Image (tube, rainbow, N blue to C red; front, side, top):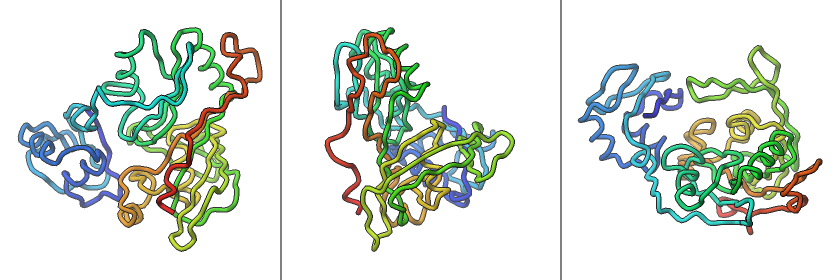
Length: 291
C-alpha cells in the first residue's frame, strides 16, 4: 500500500496520468486493473473510474511494490568496491534502499549478512554503503552519525549556479504529505540545515548547471528541497522541481546521483581503520549529456 498527497502542480490531472508520473515504471493497464478491482481510494472512497484529482487529495494505492516500481529481484547491481567488511553498490533509479523488493532485500538473498549504513531516495542514483558484519555496521553507523564519512552528490539543475555556495536554511518535515518545507528564517518545528556546492560545469544557453553537492546535515529530501528553494531545482524532480522544466527536458526522475564516499575518520575505527582516507567514487560524472 502507498499513500500519496496530491501536490498543487498535479491539481486537475487524470488519476492515471498522476500515478504513472509518480511511478514511471507503472503500466497504465495496471492502473485500470486496480480501478476495476477498486484497489485505489481517494480521500477514503473507493474509485472505479479514471477521475480528475485535486490538490491535497489523499490517494491510497493497493498495488504491490513490484508492479508499482517494476522491480525485479534478479536485477544486476554493479559493485564499486568490496572487501571482507563492506561493499559499495551503484544503485539504479527506481529502487528503494530498504523495504520489499529493495536493494537490501535483493542483497540479503546473496549475502549471509548485509545491512545498509545509510539511504538515498528511490529515484536517486549512485553509491550506497553496506556492512557485511555486525561489527562493521556498528562502526559505520557511528561514523555517519559523527559526520566522519563524506558523501558527495552530483545534481543537474535548472539555472545558472555560482562557482560555489554555502547554503543555510531551516527545514520542516511533513510526514503525512511526504514533503519537506524550507524557510530562510527559524520557525517552530523547523531544523537548521546546511548544504554546500561547487559548480562542475554549466551550459548558459540551456540554463543547466552541474553541481557537486555536499550535505553538512542529513535531513529528508534536503538536497532536492534546498536547491529548489535556492532557485536551482533539480531537473526531473516531480516533488520540488518544475513540471514545465521537467517536460522540456523529457525527464521524469530527479537527476541526482550519490557520486562519492570518503572515509574521514577522526577517531579509532577498529577493524575499519584501513579505510581511513579512502575515497570510492564513480569513474565519470553522470548527467553530462544534459549540458
